[in-house]
Each structure stands twice: as C-alpha cells, then as structure tokens.
Amino acid sequence: MDFDKLVSVMRRLALEAGDAIMEIYDSPDFDVRSKSDSSPVTAADEAADALISAGLRAAFPDVTLITEEQAASHALSASTFLIVDPLDGTKEFVQRRGDFTVNIAYVQDGVPLRGVVYAPAKNRLFYTIADGTAVEETGAFAKDAPGPVSALRVSSPDNGALMVVASKSHRDQATDDYIAKYSVKDMTSAGSSLKFCLVATGEADLYPRLGRTMEWDTAAGDAVLRGAGGSVVRFDDHSPLAYGKTGWDNPFFIAYAPGVVLK
Image (cartoon, rainbow, N blue to C red; front, side):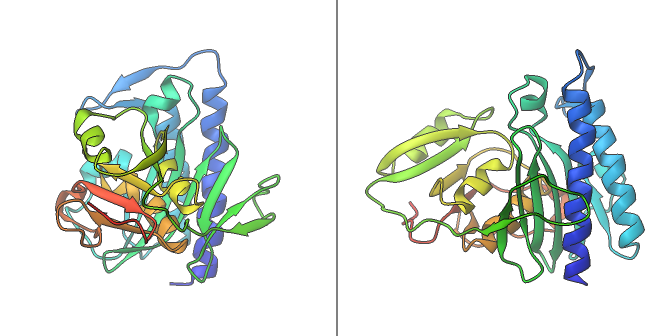
C-alpha cells in the first residue's frame, strides 16, 4: 500500500463527506428512517457513503471496501481492507449535538494501520500520517493540501486521578460499575469515535465500551489512538482488538493510555 497516497485520499474524502453532511445538518429539516437493526439513518449517511465509496474504489480498486451502509452486501470477513463509517454518531446528528464523525480506515492483517476521523461540526480533524503516527490538523482544511498539524501523544496517566470518557448515547449501569473500579479525577462524555481521539490527545486516559459496536465504528479511531501511542484491547482478556472478524461485530473493549492499570 502506498501510504502517502492513502492518507491524502482518505483525508480529502473525509473532508468532502463532511461538507455533504453539514449541508444537510444545517438545513431546516431532514428525514430520519430506521434500518433493519432499528438504528437511525439519514440522507447525510447515504450521501457521505456514496461519496467516500466512489472515491476509494477509484483510488484503490483492488482493495476490499467495507462500509456501514453497504454492509449487507459484503463478505462476512476479510484480513486486509478499507472500512468506512460515513457518519458515526447518527443519533448525535439527528439531535444536532455535533458529536458525529466521518471515519475511514485501512486494516491490514487484522490491524487498523491508518485512519482519519473528522468531526465537521466541531472543526476537529485527526488522522495518521504516512509513517503511522497520529496528528490533529488545524486551519482551513483545504482539500488539496494539509494545514498545520500537531503530533498527538497519549497522556502519562495518574492511576489515582484518571480522566475517563464514556459514551454520550450508550451509557449504562454496567459501564458505570466498571468505571467505579478506578480512582477517577473527572469524567466527560462524547459521541461517536471522538472518544478514541480524546484519549489520543491526552484529554482522557480511559474509554471503556461495554456495549455493541461494529468494526466500522472503531477502526479509524483505533488507528488514530494507536498512532498516538495508545491501545485498544478486548474487555474480557485484554488482548488487542482485532479486525476482519466474521460479521464485523466487536466484543466489549477498553481504549486507554498505556500506564493505566486495567481492572
């Protein structure tokens, strides 16, 4: 894989998809439908999916492409592939809370090596550069050239005063019970894959997810966090979260800055 080309294409497509999403987000009204799993879908999901899919297929025709909105037509598993969640956090989008993201990742042999997470309503853009390290870009987000970037690095956590981030829409008692095992200085909530990015920037130390997610929900954020020195492991045995699983379902997981003593 040509990682320079890959990063350039993923970044540009994420920004273009963000523009399409925001055009609908800023409109007076939009339709919300339910998919077969009862999760919401909007025209923004579909527009972003179509744009990103076309761009990735044109640039990388020989690489398997998995997207949330086309999941039913995909093979059950793969080892090397591009994976897309064109609008992660549809509930946040529908409620106009801003915590939604565009997610594109490249997975090789089960490991998310490169990824981009773009939160267009919050003007935050995170991605891995060609060498695999993670950055956050600031500026005007020109499509043809990156603006200023700052390298991301996870925190050096204090296990006596941890910063924890949890889901805004999927918080439950099991998650609260697990978090209660730690000495927590403060907690914040965030929607979508932004939670991975908050750990990657050092704004949080720990993000546990004791609920259902799919690989397209996590791959890009996982890549960014790994590129910042963080880790994502299975909740049950603390082994690295792997990708390309049959059916694309994730187990419960923990994203964290190394140095956190996991419970």
